[in-house]
Image (cartoon, rainbow, N blue to C red; front, side, top):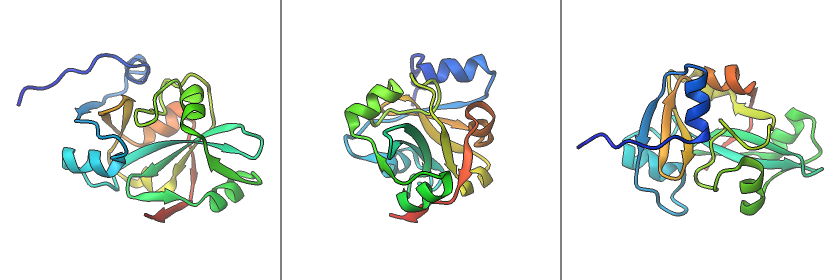
Length: 162
């Protein structure tokens, strides 16, 4: 199979600007397929595919949560750990506005607005992760420490089984 080239996105531009080594993993996007679908078609463990979730606190201040593809966020645990009264997922159109990406193609890199980033602690123990590269149907493979180095991602413990 010929290697498919994916055009630049704000995420890949940021990664290249910081000389981050990454691999490109394009795949056939499936509406509402999520991280489970991308993991399946790319032959990856869903635990190593990291989804980028745009959420907001009680004051509608946006934040990003990086979570394993086969886990969901305990908003109660997250809120408690970050000192918020409550946290909830943003509506898709609000998430698109905050990130500058379409839901399903949200990367934590190169977002339109700077937002605090929280990462499920166990992701940082993985040798490599696949995370959205800024377009639907496109993941990049990186060292998870890049999320801390470039985004200032703070570790949290809020993952629950799907």
